[in-house]
Image (tube, rainbow, N blue to C red; front, top):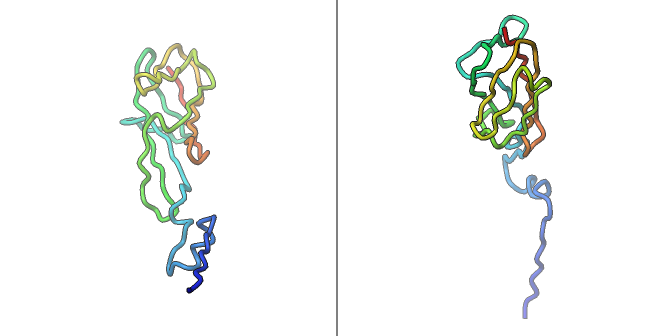
Length: 123
């Protein structure tokens, strides 16, 4: 009767040296950039928006190997610094502006904790 030894590697990090050319860091999310679809920020990075209007957020999430990571609106936790100026419409997956003023929208990718902000001014 032969004895067989079974070795279980708990963490993927323990497996990486066994796989030639494998770099797990390449598959980790490393960056996220938020914007407003169809609009450009000014030189200071501020989006100038119209009052009482809905805007679609956009994002670019990247892996360590440079590949784009597909994400949806619901993959982020969204907050605003001033809900009188802009509020998060989670049912419509959009931002809705209100009264004139400035606000910062923060989006945190819930799976990785990566975040970015969008500065807006409603004129």
